[in-house]
Every structure is written in C-alpha cells, then in structure tokens.
Image (cartoon, rainbow, N blue to C red):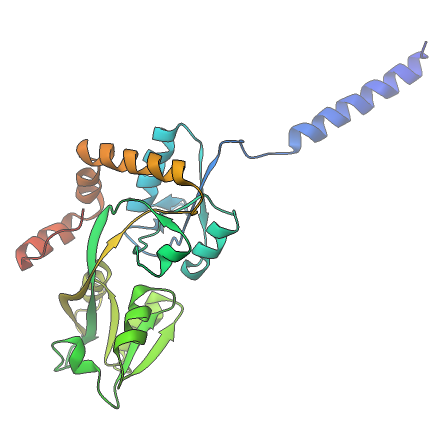
Amino acid sequence: MLSPEMNSHCRLLLLALLALLAGCSHPPANELVVGMELGYPPFEMTDEKGAPSGVSVELARALGKALDRPLRIENMGYAGLIPALKTGKIDLIISSMTATPERAKSIAFSEPYLKTGLCLLVPKNSAAKTIADLDQAGQTVAVKQGTTGQAYAAAHLHQAKVLVLDQEAAAVLEVVQGKVGGFIYDQMSTYQNWKRNAETTRAILEPFQTESWAVGARLEDKELVAKVNSFLSTFRAQKGFEALGDRFLREQKDAFRALGYPFFF
C-alpha cells in the first residue's frame, strides 16, 4: 500500500501525463489533405484574415463534406505539388492544374471540371496579334515555372528566348516594364492581369491551345478518383460550379460572354 505522499506524487505524475497526451494533436485518421498554391486569385488565394479562399478552396470544402472527411489545405509552390502528391504529403491537388498527357504519366486525373486556354499578355504598344508574332529572333517570352505555358514554349518556340520565372507577378512585371514581348498564361489570369495594368498592357485572349483543369491524385488511388468524379458530376448537376462562378467570377463571365468566348465551367 502506498503512503499518502506516494499517492499524491503518483496522482501528480498521472495528471502531468494526461496533460501531455492532451497537448499532442494528431490529425484525424480520415483527414483529406488537399494541396494548392494560394497565390492564384480568384481560384486559390487568401482572404483578409489570411485564411484560404477562392473557387478551388470552396470546391475542396464541398468535396471534403461529400466524402465525409475533415479537410486540411496545404499551401505550397505550384512546382512542388506533384512531388508532394507522389510522396504522400497530400492526398489530392486542386490548384487550377491542367490535365496533360505528360503529367498523366505520373499522376491520375479526375474528369475535367473547367476548360480554358493559353493566351498572351503583351505590352500595350506591341504589334503582336498571335503567338507566332512573338516567336522571332530578338524576342523574349515570359512563362511561369511548372505551368503548361512553360511546356508550350519549350515545345513550340524555336526563335524567341524563353524567360522562366517562379512567380506570376514577376512575369507580369516584365510585360508592364516592356522587358519581354509577352507572357504565356491562361485566359482568366491574363484577363485579370490586363485589367490591373490596362495602361501598360494588352490582352490577346484568343487561345492558341485549349486546356482542361482536373483534380490530381496518386495513380494507385483509383477508388478516390472514382469518388471525386462522382462528386464533380453531382456538384455540376446541383449548379455548384455556376454558383462559384457567380460568387468569384461575375465580371469575367460577363466579359468573356461579350467577347464571344465560352466560359469555363
């Protein structure tokens, strides 16, 4: 039988152990970890409080709810998304990622949920009308690292110099300052970048390569991909994409309709 002093000491040790265990936070076993780069508004961004926001964030939240899995969003650089997926650091990629044959060799893709295309942001005084006008000796074309714009430039630009940059904002600045002949990027971002820099840039929104965005998963996660596809079908039927477009992309929807370009979702 323990003495009163020993009993008291044991109780204190037990309380300390319980407090230590309570302080150890473990993620839920069924947590859904979605990777995205929160630097691509209005799809992936942060709100005024620094919390994840945007089209892809709301899509991820709806998916987590449909799968009955608590959601955790991991913010990381775009070029690091596929490596993080393949090594198990994240479960899915929802980050405005184009489903390409090259990427499909190493990861699986859901059914497409959005259609867009590559186009150009050029200096306002540029005479360029097409991508061919920029593929000339003495020209420099900016692209963002890890994007399909970089892949397109590597495969199709044979005369122009290609400037690869880590950040979209840096590529836009090159155009604003007239240091490059153009920036290859998607239609939505090009439109927004033009609107923000209308005095110094011009948008050539006619796409020279059409693309589709999809959710990325590991090749072996076939069951998860099937569940994502089922969710996307239901979400579309329930007008979820239409609601996201009205919430985050109203101006762009109206502008693209006026220009005669089909709008995405």
